[in-house]
Image 1 (tube, rainbow, N blue to C red):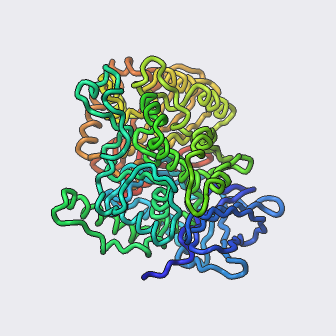
Image 2: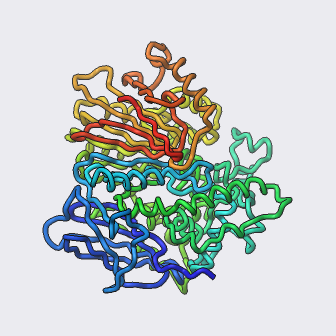
Image 3: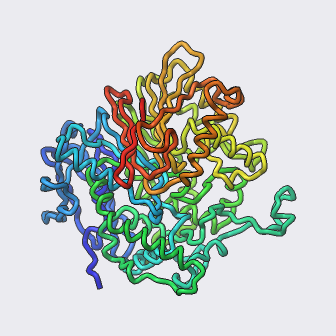
Length: 612
């Protein structure tokens, strides 16, 4: 049996400011963790969340004893168990004795990406991000190294889980003794291997008798699944499964406990070919996960959820919400996903003055080493502060476009707006008075018109879930208000919108057609880190968009954003001119807060640059 390493996760550097640094680790036994920053004395507040017999999650907040932490320069750090040093050499770059972090203030180099699907056939683009930091440290010193990593959604795929990954999840639950839910939401079977790829059949459904007579399922006597993901065959259900998936997605040492070479299913299994392909891709991820771990040990990382962190089409329509949140098992799955997000993603984003109820909430719902989470749902669903800001220059404003939805009042089957009126007003106030801002929206604000038109057609046919109609323009009220915000004179002179979600990348620049102020808006979309849109299809859609919505096309007058002039920017090389479907992490480079360079570093080592 493989010995369980002491350090199971991290250190993961999260929010880092002159007055606060958040760092997270997980260990296999209880320790007294203490971080030391070179040249800076710090107070440390640590919260221990015990998640299993051999799983201890430590969320550590460092604050300066006097003054402020130094910004925009490397700070070596060490980790100790009391007075005993814990070896972090595996996370150090060449010629560096210890890992180091940079507290960003004047931003000049930001990494951004989204959509990291563990079993996608592409390599992990975080490998290239790690190599960029290594190269900067070796060749260019610290002046050019990335200061911030922004991951704008789908850091995990809770609804799209590979067969081998589900086996790894349950092997990890057993080896670490991760605490399980006392009352299972759904009977997923004792033999996980025997029930692979069958969960879609047992996930909750609305009986056809309860459907509206306007719904096709009523007439075909077909029950309507609550979870609309077409890849829900291994959908996560229980809290312990989400915890294990986060460890496997973020940690390198954790894969030492998993021997993927032993995983197999019967030769006559109908999903045998799929299982073997997923196994190959997961094996590659396990081998390269050290790059992601080293990157996050050096670069302050901010994260915000999108749908796959919970489930596909999360809160897309009011009908979807009504079906899911009124069913105990369905709402329990959403609760588990959001609680695990709070632990492994949400806490690290929070400002010093932000309330955070989830550590104590979990403590009160752990009884005899089992989770009793039924009464925790209200606190999770009522929490209203998943969005956040970082007071850098430019300011970083990160939107929660999932829990503040503007529901359609005319038809509950129509897509909800990505932000409701109250949050749009808050965004308007936030942008006022800022000359430059980086706005993080999981879905592109200014997307590809031809694709949005196709989504609109499916919505008219009553099938918005079929094409993931997640664009800002899908809801009349939110689209109008958002565009008015960008057309105002108080809008920042330079707004850089960072988005993902769509599994392809592009660069648009936007200006108001009518207005007194020459504001510039950049829509920079990078997706995915480990995911891709079908390339032949995206090339076709790119050409279709160029024909239908050329600058002189009258069809532009029928779009909601006709008062905004949207220019596509070309790539300087490669076969794809505007829309690039090739797994990548993006590097956003700034000069005095203005965009100066935009590149995609692809998972295969190639680079795409956009003309600005």
